[in-house]
Image (cartoon, rainbow, N blue to C red):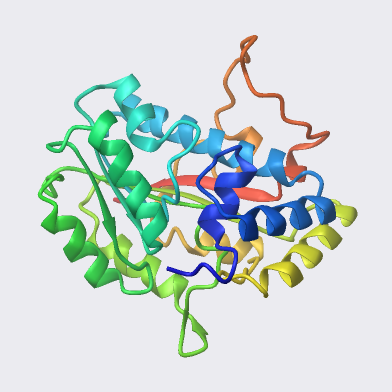
Length: 273
């Protein structure tokens, strides 16, 4: 457990208004928001994309989800969103940070079903070990389609011996998924964003070098390649606010983007042939 450096999961929790974070995370988060004022809106838009994507896939008949890099439970978790759409859905949470896994287990003890929900510690950089750990939970049926969530995780560098192995790990997980499965993915990019936000991303990159999770913003083509031969469902790869937007209600969160590309995060959902 890294308590000497801010971590992505705890800072993200703070950005979304959660409380499972330490002073070092809050101080770091405040510095990131000072350098990038839209950051809370960006985190919120990303979270709401996750909600919409899960609901959409449940509507398409998907009943099983693996949420890798799930982070600390906050603001509508995958199993809660899925259960609202169909109480028979199954979810396995995966994270490599002990604090995130511990909080997920606590949440599931009171708001989960051990036959349908699990939380495990595993590392995206070791996809075969991760897959074996998911299988060992006994929650999922791999003769049926599964939705793999990689939401705002791959723009944190997945380093092994100085090499970013994120794309190779994703390729391996795509290979392991049953036919008819889906990949839900979101990833920050510097390409196509307004010039002031480009500088914000440069500043954010610099700040995160001192954290436990340095970042790596990919260009759009590299993000598209993470889907491999999966067929992107409509509307393809796009900015977070544009992926199946839902009608606002009086209680809907307010996000202060003047243009979709201010979200700086590209998202998509692909289906395995």
